[in-house]
Image 1 (cartoon, one colour):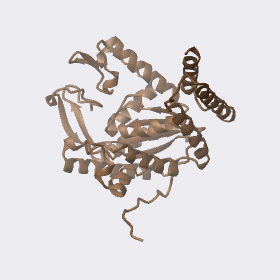
Image 2 (cartoon, rainbow, N blue to C red; image 1 turned 135 degrees about the vertical axis):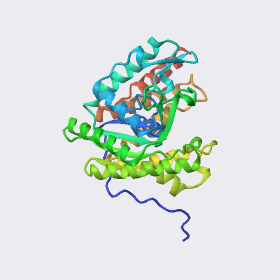
Image 3 (cartoon, one colour; image 1 turned 60 degrees about the vertical axis):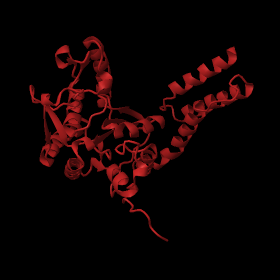
Image 4 (spheres, rainbow, N blue to C red; image 1 turned 30 degrees about the vertical axis):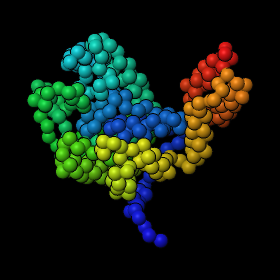
Length: 335
């Protein structure tokens, strides 16, 4: 039989994540994609509390701020084009007033900091080795918020620079957890074409080399998951990219997610994940007759399924799904 693809080999060492564990995902929008699927499967995880971050130094800074329980003040922000921004945060945290921006930032940061001591797994997705340093402060910007390029100095991080900073960070985090913490490193398959295709390749190569050295420094604590290789080497076709030809398509994200679930999630989670997916699909169903008794019974069956799962696995959070069912049932009863 003809072989039409090159298969990415399963890593020799994989984590074993189950529902008892608490997870934190940080990094590029690819971390958000995987995080959303983990949340849908009812894993206990926090996803990008700073919004999307792309480079290893900004991701490390975010973690250090969580450990220190940093509280942002007005001096940490700047105003640009009618909005107040944090150079460490995604534009989702920007706001028309500094008070509103600070409320968003500090509320989210406090929530993430509270979970840090209970953390079992940290999933880091590095997107680029290119960074933008603020010419006034010398600090690496997590997000530039469309400030003029003249405000920044652009440079590519070295492998040694990334490794030194990450090893220092993880040494502290592992010690803080009494050796419990496990880290999954991935390189985002999203190409940063604005850097230029050659520069993007150099950037990804830098990240890959750095990830290997970090994993070697923590053989019992750091795992590498080949998200980049699955898309670039195994799928290797523009069919698996979105219309911008840069971001992976939904099909490609699903493909990588299935490998992640197979390689990194405990086998006993599979049946629970399947039931969670069935509940999610059932709630997304659009009935032909929402006022019918048949639809009411359908919603009732979803509630019963959720209660049965919660009885068996009380740590699964179905609060939103239960509220959705009750809202739909009330609407149906009033009609």
